[in-house]
Amino acid sequence: MTSPLAPKCFPVLPPLVGVRMATAETGIKYINRNDLLFLIFDKVVDVAGVFTRSCCPSAPVDHCRRILPNGKARALVVNSGNANAFTGIKGREATAITVKAVAEVVGCQEDEIYIASTGVIGEHLDVSCFIHMFSLLAEEAREDNWFNAAKAIMTTDTFPKGARRTFYLGDNKVTINGIAKGSGMVAPDMGTVLSFIVTDASIDSSLLQDILNEAIGSTLNSITVDSDTSTSDTLLLFATGNSMKETHIYRRSDPHYKFFSGAMKDILLDLSLQVVCDGEGAKKLIEVSVTGAKSVSSAKKIAMSIANSPLVKTAVAGEDANWGRVVMAVGKSGEEADRDRLSIFFGPHCCAVQGESFPYSSEKEIRGYMKNNKICIHVDIGLGSGDAKVWTCDLTKEYVAINGTYRS
Image (cartoon, rainbow, N blue to C red; front, side, top):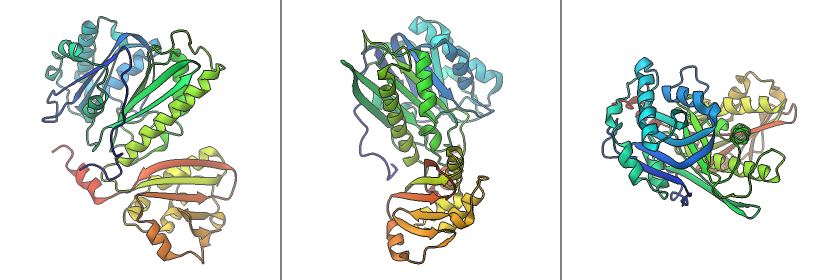
C-alpha cells in the first residue's frame, strides 16, 4: 500500500542530453518487477559521491569509494533485492565481474563504472541473473526513462522518489534530476540509502564534491526513520556539462557556484523528505526543531535524540502530545541542557515552559493538532544560540510487520 504521505505523482524529470537509462527484471529477489538499473553516459562525465560510514560497508561501496578520486564516470549499475554486503570474497568477485562486463559494453575503463546494491544483507549476489543483459540494455537505453529508473531501485519503498530543479546560470538553462530510494534502515551518515543526481551543468569534480559535502549536513544527514545506518548508503552526483558549453564553474568564488550549491541543497532536501515520508509503516511526518542550544552541533544531537526516540515516535503515532517523552529524549542526548529552562511546543501549542507544564495550554486544541499528518515539535533549550532541524516519521505496528517478514 502506498504511503499516505506520498506525493500526488512522480515529477516530470526532463531528458538530459547524453544520459540514457534502461531497466530490467532479473529475478534477484522480486517477481514481476524490474530490479536492475543501467544508466549510461555517452561521454565521460564528472562525478562526486558520499558513502556510508558503517564499518561494515557493502562490496559496491568499497568499489565506488576506491575509484571516486578519479572523478570520472561513464556508467552506473544499480540492483535491488540484494545488498551484496557482508558477502566476503564472493561479494567482491561479483562486483568485479559486473564492473568488467559493463566496461566492455560501454567501451571504457573499469574505474569509470559505478555500482550500487540494496536489499538483503548477507546473501550472495548471483550475477548470472543479469551479467548477460548489458549489451541489450545499452541498445534499449533512452533519455526519458527516469520514472522506471526510480522504480527499479526500490525495495520496501511504496512509491518511486524523484525531484528536479531547472534554473539559469547566466544564459545557460541548467537542469538537475534526482532519484532516491529509502524506506527502512534510514539514519544516513554521509549519504542517504541510495540517491543518484545528474545535472547538465559544467563543474569540476572537486567542486562537485565540495557542494555535496556542504549540502548533506542539513538534508540527508538530518533525517531518520529508525536510527539504523545502512551498509550501502550511496549518494552520487554526476555532471555532464552539456548545458554550459561556454561556461564552466572552476572555483568556489564563481558567482554561479553559490546558486548551483543552493539548488543542490534544495533538491537533496526534497528527496530526503520523500524518504522520510515513505518510512516503513509511516502515517505522519515529524519535524523536530531545536533552538537555544549551546552550539549547532549540540542542537543537532538533541534533535536527533528526540527524532530517534521510539517513545516519542509511538506517541505521535497514537496522536498523543506526550511532551514528557520529549523531555526524556533531551535528557538522554548527552548534550548540555537545563531542566528549568526547557520550553516545548507541539506546532503552535506551548506544552511546557521553563521546566514545567504550561498552565494555559488547551488539551483539546493540542489533541486536534496531533491528528495532522505533519507534526512539528519545537524545543527551546534556553542556553545559547545553537539551532538545528531534523525530520523523522512516526513508529507504527506496520513497521514491525514489514520488518518481521522482510526475508520471507
